[in-house]
Image (cartoon, rainbow, N blue to C red; front, side):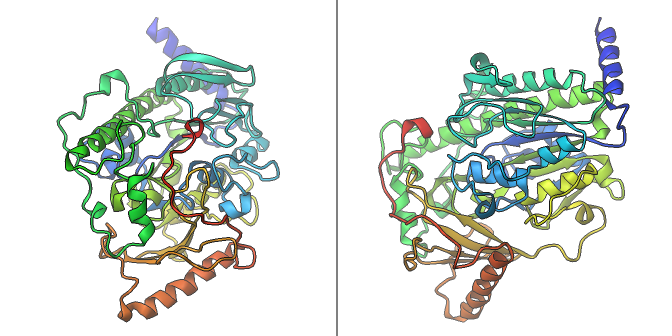
Length: 494
């Protein structure tokens, strides 16, 4: 029976790809809040991810990939569109992807692809209806839950689907992949909840890391040269002495022994990633059994990074490295045909995914994108590849723990600027880091007189790269920074 079933899947795969065998499929797996170093292949000594690691070993591990806004909805919109948030307009977690902007799935759909999206969408908190660009669409309102989420399956209405989130969306994705795609190439995007808070591993992984000690990182305490707002954040929803996404029941708590709550939180976070690795094994097995593996572009990435105690913070939003740096792995022999699988150190951004995938699929690339295709960079090197880029984040009244941020990162330096917003002058000390010599950002060099020239150089570069993307002091609008507050956010939007 197993041989008959596999033969059936193989025949179906041949039928699905017979019309456009030269056009690759896309399997795009998007994780939520996954740190760049939370995988075995990116440096974790504890989180074992053999299936994701295998993709990296066979493809391209983009080791310096960054989000242009470290917040779920803006980053997802940038991945889809190839545009910065100030252009596509999704600058917070409550805004829909705008109807007037093309996404790469829309372009693929128009060029003959069968497209599907299953899992966490997270643009528009109260909308679970199908979105443009997808022939099949399954999502839910808000954050979803690790167990028993209500999914709207292709517009049929919200229905509770029992089971663990990662397993459920993988089941649904495999069901869709097994359908007849009418001879078209396909693009399937899977939006995992993991490893977003509230971190809840599958029962089989609940105690995997019980024996691993996790102290607060050393940068959590050496804050004398940091802006004042970072110390103010310590006791809030996004600080290490706060509730830690409900892993700490009594808070704030700055006692040394309370680090155990922090440790438990990190263990939970790691545990959810193990289920994602299991999911990748199931998806790969299907592609192998149906003969589609080498004709499928497999993308594994995160929407933004996550702070785990660095500078005394949890969550994201800031421009510190753990917040903005994300894993990106692409396996596709058609991308690496001219070279061996590799790790790339060049700075790649979320806005680069849309033009890269469209080029690989032979689909039209929209004009005036902020991102650029990395195909040439991978295959032969690109001497004109970016050496700098800008980051921006807008203060949120719903999560008043991070100021407005505008900053520039080069291959070696980072300059972080905190404009108050609403036309008011700056209110926070800037930050300057030599990333090459100080990758953990231990030393804010902004007050060093001997580096005044470097600061001026980076300020000019920040203005230049922002202007290149159409963002100038005249049109750079942002909310008024009302300061760091200690109240907890509304439970409905956490």
